[in-house]
Image 1 (cartoon, one colour):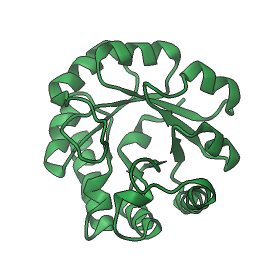
Image 2 (cartoon, rainbow, N blue to C red):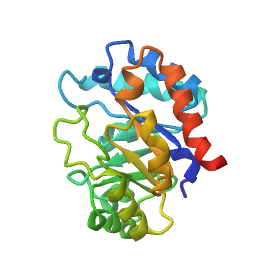
Image 3 (cartoon, rainbow, N blue to C red):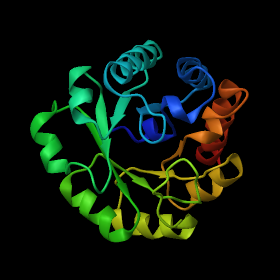
Image 4 (cartoon, one colour):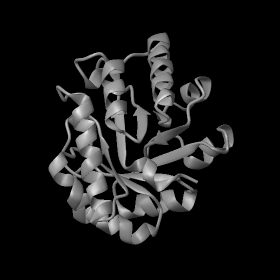
Amino acid sequence: MMKRDLLQVYFILGSNNTEQDPLYVLEEALKGGITLFQFREKGRDALTGEAKKQLAIDMKKLCHQYDVPFLVNDDVDLALEIEADGVHVGQEDMSIHEVRKIVPANWFIGVSSTNVREAVQAKNDGADYIGVGPILSTNTKADAKKPIGAEGLREIRDNVGGLPIVAIGGIQLGDVIELMRAGADGISIISAISQSPNPESTAATFYEHVNYFFEE
């Protein structure tokens, strides 16, 4: 069972999401207090083959130094090969049932959902958490769907009960409190941290904003 607080500040990064050294950006984000990390090496100029594998290995090592779980986006074979802590799959990727058959029982499995139907299906299939979005428009994913906003997030929360959910898609610091009030257990970030001139400070500020909600 996934601990809900792991989703508080969920950082996603691939080498093509930053102009800096991705390992530097990841370590700075870890210093800043991210609670979960997903390796997402997709899209234009993404690494492949051995280069992708080596970056994943190096990122996993960093995450474990800071006691942060390391997840892999979509690539279940790679996740198994490097002994990740879990995987995140989209609607077009391998199903949860297929993933469960081949991964360790203690792995975290997350699923992306854009609407209530997909979210309820993910819950029924046994997802450990749902990545809900895109909340706002984002340039990170070329195939991103129409933003659902805080209202879409709230509707999904109302239909999945206590299943952990994390909001994703174009989120900036000013959006955090509204999204937490709408039912998110945490915030997932790519560019707000990966393109920040100070990833550690930005990650720390996201952490402070999320925890402000819990302290209200």
